Image (cartoon, rainbow, N blue to C red):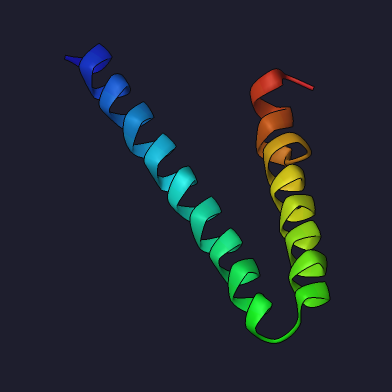
Length: 66
């Protein structure tokens, strides 16, 4: 039972993360209407934020035992 719940939780977590990424990049795409260079800047900012959240978070460090 616990193993099945873990699988369902993993799927839900993956879908939630994909939804957040789509929202962030959607905001970047909307900036295209203001100026193409702004879209590039916002996209770079989104990539930076996502990189920090994925690979530099304190939660990840705690999970890795660092």
